[in-house]
Image (cartoon, rainbow, N blue to C red; front, side, top):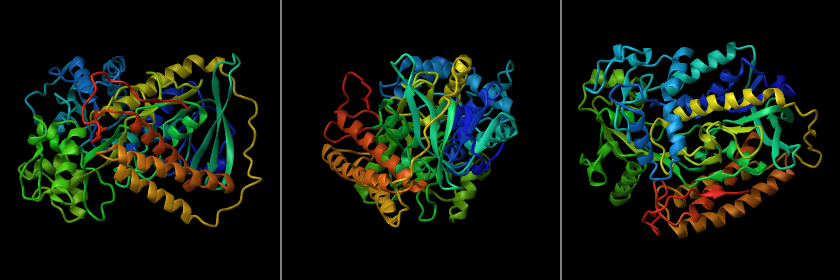
Amino acid sequence: MSNDPATLESATDILIIGSGAAGLTLALRSADFARVTVLSKGDLQEGATFYAQGGIAAVLDDADSVDSHVEDTLIAGVGLCHRHIVEHMVAHSAEAVSWLVGQGVPFTTKSQHESTSGNEKQQDSSQLGSLHLTQEGGHSHRRIIHATDATGKAVFETLRKRAEDHPNIHLLEGCTAVDLVTQMAENGSQRVCVGVYVLNQETRSVEVIRARFVALATGGASKAYLYTTNPDGASGDGIAMAWRAGCRVANMEFNQFHPTCLYHPHAKSFLITEALRGEGAHLELPNGDRFMSRFDDRGELAPRDIVARAIDHEMKRLGCDCVYLNITHKPAEFIREHFPTIYQRCLKFGIDITQERIPVVPAAHYTCGGVMIDERGETDILNLYAIGETSFSGLHGANRMASNSLLECFVVAFGAAESIRSKLTDTPLVETIAAWDESRVTDSDDEVLVSHDWDEIRRFMWDFVGIVRSTKRLQRANSRIGLIREEVRDYYIKHKVTNDNLELRNLALVSELIIKCALQRKESRGLHFTLDHPDTDAEAVDTILVP
């Protein structure tokens, strides 16, 4: 293993762009039969996986069933989920958790917590039966496997250690993918991905890596919004690169806003996991009144789109800065044991959640659309894969159900590894790729243009393409993004690439794709709610954009 970007190699069997749950899983599932290189544009941990609190949805309990998990997902997705994909993901959920347990992920067990639900039953026939299960919004059963309230961190650190120890896996930090390299396949009917141009941040030069297979595992695009739970790198890089290379994207209008992000001037983007509501936390107005029952019979356990819109409605109606999440009616020891990360983080900001309410607001959290793939992660371009939040598999529909996203990362990565294994011997490395040409560009002396455009995009996306939309707002956003994309294109052509202007280039493109998709949908469904078309059409149709 090496994390020295100066040691960029010129060729590999599998090049994975992104070092989160999806990317590391594909690396570990492939490393026994192929050489694997994993690129991270920042520190390895700076992806969404590390910050995921909730858990992984899987059917492990005798009181639960695959059919129940499937139906819950279809309901949350408001008619847009692809049933065969949902069934495929859920059917492989126990396999995914079993593999993670085998890797050594320290999931919370029932023996570590007293049972909190009469529905929990020990499965004596399986090691998985000892895992503690919690419940989240949209789920009809306890089926969330977790590591207290820091599941993503536990998964990431375990998989990273495994990857570091594997002789066939090369981990590189400080490397930003610029663009995919494609050429026509021998049959002349399809493009094939043969490598990637990569900015080596240490040498500030763009190098080329040839690869038999390339996988995009770069996460979502929630940094397109002013307020987000995502880390800074979530700029839609994989989606933008795939689009430029010729891949279709779908359902980019469905941006999930997590209902409960900590509202504090110094908290930046700290998410308050849905599991609090699963364990009985109440959403309250500033005066202490509960309000969710006015919006949905499921109250605090309604799907995220409903909860986020309810909070947004109440904040606008009252003119208040936030609402409150209250779990003080639970025993203090219960709170500290179940939610140690949240307890300690809030305490740093002077909030003792065993005695005080937590101020919360919605924030952009998850990109439900993305690069179109099949259940094995294969895209429109031969030998190019997309996994995790970068992709659109059809699992999430118009609204992702909590904790299905990590499940998707593992199941699709398993399928992608098998797909690559089946094609590896018949897929040669391309012999040469043209070097990156910087002969007609200069260093920028005006980086403020990058930061200004970045800030403007995030603000108008929040104001005009946020939780509640209208045709007028979308048209205004579309007009502005067109002008900004011209500015960004001109800047990119004239100057040497940097990590910042590459992210801006991708963010501007993905924002435009989000707006185009939103303008095409003349209904309200799931995460896309528009004042001009408040009803839901009888027929559910994906929004597909073709380059």
